[in-house]
Length: 492
Ligand code: HEM
Ligand SMILES: [Cu+2]
Image (tube, rainbow, N blue to C red; front, side, top):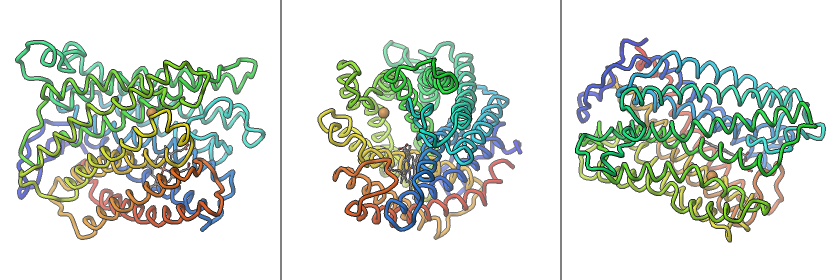
């Protein structure tokens, strides 16, 4: 399975791709991406069912709806993490020496954790949403038992432990090669007078992800454990405000990291088609360091309506919401346009998806920043505006990047895109935009999020949403089946 390591090259008719050094984890990376593809399609169907139930097309009993909501939320966050980790590992292993054992250990933890989480939800009835906010896990009013809560929390903890191992390994490998995290971030070139070649974009991005995710997962583990003890021993009390702060610190950083891991695919693959290498310029290095510092402090934007939280935290949350992702997004979007412009690049499924992903990420940030404004959040908080903005940059941003990388790897042996592949791009983009806009429009009309049953006047938005969701799901299933059919090419 691993002999193909260095064989990922663009076919002859495409722009030349510098032969990559061996990456002996190819087979495992293919398994990671295969699981990602299947789980994405399945969870999208869960989403479609939820939306169809809100629209009144089908009837899902509320208990079942909240189970689906919990599974969709935690599942999508986790699988974006798994897919992103595969992209990061695949490309990072060209520059530093990563452990295949740890890559496998993460997968095993992930799968065991998923079994526990699925059991908790669909057997035990756990339905507190992926954010497991206190006191829901412990106080279900009899809807689910303590055993289901324990299974869910331990399952998520297990997934976290796997990722923690992975990022400890990337940290170890980066330090071994570059000597210090500062050097891996290109600080001597960004802030000093060093004229040495800066570390490649993949190393810079991976270093940032490693630095921000280790504390995020550690904090996640702390609050998962506290919630577990609280559920088993109610006399051990958890401060609700502290719990929410810890959960959103972890949640915000982890989900943002999925973008920062997946975007490595753009840095590595677009140049293969344009023939123009993507170098770490000074603005690029500064941008990644700036985003690294801001992304860990922006999470209070999830607590604007928690008036007990300190005012300074809300102010910080608002200011950083405007600036946090901007540096990396700006250098990446500008870099993408410069890389592609007049390069004679072939517009195939891979390059189209990667290009779309940068545009989707850019577009999705606009409604996010709007909601990050306290005055607007007073109205939009807990409305469908929120899923509206994050579905844009998750569906059209992260997941497009993942599908783009899958196509790249799967067609590296020269398999050509067919008419169905090309149609799927349009379905994915049009369906994704329409679907997200149906959420945004409903949110603008103050339709609440996370409600199983919708009032009749809200259903117009829901029905339009279902139509577009159907289009995007069909497009995604076309990508997934195309990838799975060709996936063996990666590992052989
Ligand atoms: C066809 C694609 C998709 C459909 C039809 C879909 C549908 C939905 C629906 C109906 C909700 C509940 C909205 C509410 O009433 O509050 C939801 C929530 C959510 N979705 Fe999706 N979704 C899709 C793709 C994705 C993707 C790709 C991701 C992430 C990578 C994602 C992540 C989430 C998250 C995190 C939530 C919030 C769950 C919560 O509120 O606890 N979704 N989605
Ligand atoms: Cu956030």
